Length: 355
Image (cartoon, rainbow, N blue to C red):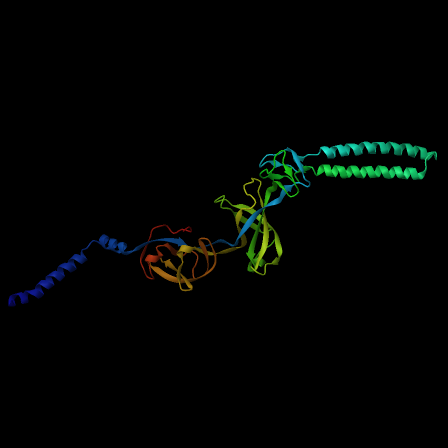
């Protein structure tokens, strides 16, 4: 037992010496590899100045440039239908003819009477020149001619009421009548929409009123056409603010020559408020802490520094940086949850302006 106690310090010294020699002669590549394995892999973004549009977003409803529901003016039977569902028609084109037999006969009868009255008027004028006819007889005949002309005008107007024509050029909807149908006033025959231009009505909060003006460009999108944008401009801003919603109604017009947009569509409207030349960073780079925002800045030695920044305007995916960063600095966009202030990182991507 005494001998074992005397050898223990010697054995300890030998082991310590072997460990020291092993450390001093350990390959440098292995040491570097061990350090690299402790570095956290991240992706970075290079901060830079860029144009940053500040926008107003709103929801609106698409309306036709002109829109009407075609109805009859009188009660009568349909004798001709001169259109099909969805036809494109021109202004003044005849669409539906109602029974006009009686009115045509009435106009013909009045025309015969008018022709005879005019012949009598010519004869009386000639007699009046030789005093063979009185002035009173001449006046009565002239009044008769004018009365018949007025009656023909009324009959022609009644005849026109039996013809339903397109009040403007556009696209028809679904046909609601057939030949032989009895139509009454207010009975829907079809719809007509001029969709060459689409009017989009939308509301914006009153705090944006000063940033809006007639002629301002807008961009609209629809779920019916994912990824497609329709360009237009504001043509009118209401004169009043809604006291209940504290919003104001505006109208934008969009050229719809392709006829892709239809009345009633829900449109997402984006209005360009102003364009800033400012520092921007991706939203995923932000690390919120309470009411403050932080980012992780990667230095030349690949060490991370946590830094508070002040942000301004936002838009989907991007944030304006008011202060706290300088152009050219690298910030972490992927791996923020795995690092902290002073961490060593390994950058997986080349520093770039795209996240």
